[in-house]
Image 1 (tube, one colour):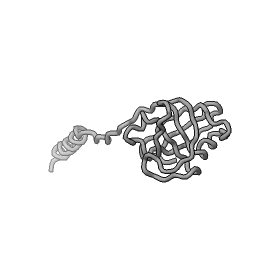
Image 2 (tube, helix red, strand yellow):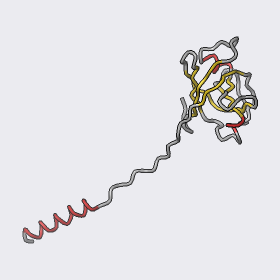
Image 3 (cartoon, helix red, strand yellow):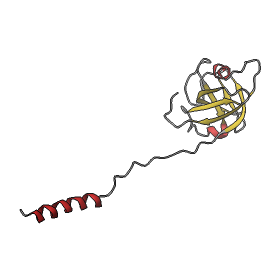
Image 4 (cartoon, helix red, strand yellow):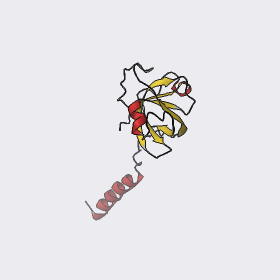
Length: 137
């Protein structure tokens, strides 16, 4: 082969690599995080609206019936902040709270206390948001 043939082959290989399409990254779906705020209270847990039995030492949350709907947030974690002292904890949605306003949540006693609140206080101001489905603290 002549030197020109080698050069022609090399240029053909280089141009095919340059012209090759770039690999496509997998599509990622991002969920917009909405931070809610409202009253945080506690209740004695048991069989929740998600169909699971819970005990007071579990970090369980009941969300307002308007957000709970048909249970699409069952088994989803929330990050909750006591806005009075800045303490944060994670709770698992397993119940509905018919008496709660849209931003209000009802928590198991252990979750309420983990936010630095005494059960004697009964009500705290909270902000919270859902974590992505599949998240585990």
